[in-house]
Length: 207
Ligand code: 5GP
Image 1 (cartoon, rainbow, N blue to C red):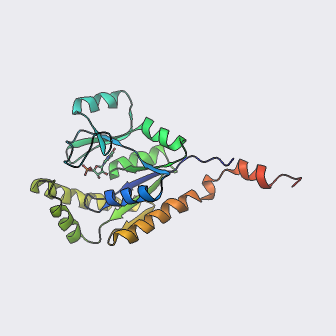
Image 2: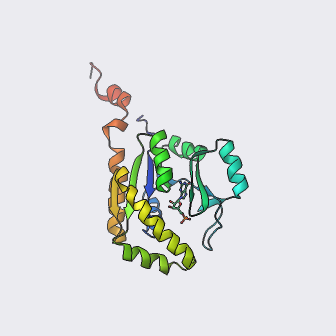
Image 3: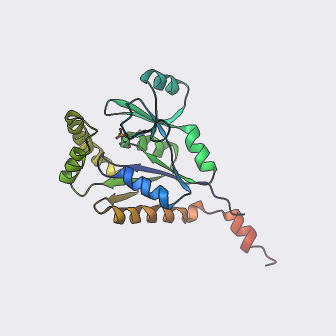
């Protein structure tokens, strides 16, 4: 049997670039791709459920978990803490599924150090104007939060060069096709191939 451990795929984007929608669509199409549910200290938005979108915890709990070594990476984003659980990603990877980490550029940097063969994708909006309009249309965030997010967006966009792929999310379905191509192509890389299986299946002298 061919052996396959999942790929670790990091997706970053300034908020409002449409990353969440893209990831949800990707998960619907590829059932062997899973999102890792992060821990955060920010409050849940109306449409968010605990344990589904995030595990919502207090700052005190978060600090305790840092001490216990729960996180493979964590960062402070927009005044709140966010972190990825080591255990959660290991469980998904060992099941053979790819894992998507929807994390910011600081977290992506830490993942790159721990997992040099992780795949990093940056999603860009088509323009700064579109990004602003998308954030304003999102009624869940207060005006001062939007201003903070726009300033942060510029900072984050500066980091795109460290990523392996850049996808511009203008037309969602086109961006989705590009993302699907990346996930599928990464599976076919020779570096990830099960050479023992190829040797046993095709390269024995007597065959
Ligand atoms: P939001 O509050 O809009 O859900 O997310 C804000 C930012 O935090 C996004 O850029 C998102 O990618 C990032 N984020 C979410 N989970 C994590 C995490 O576990 N680690 C890090 N470093 N960033 C995260």
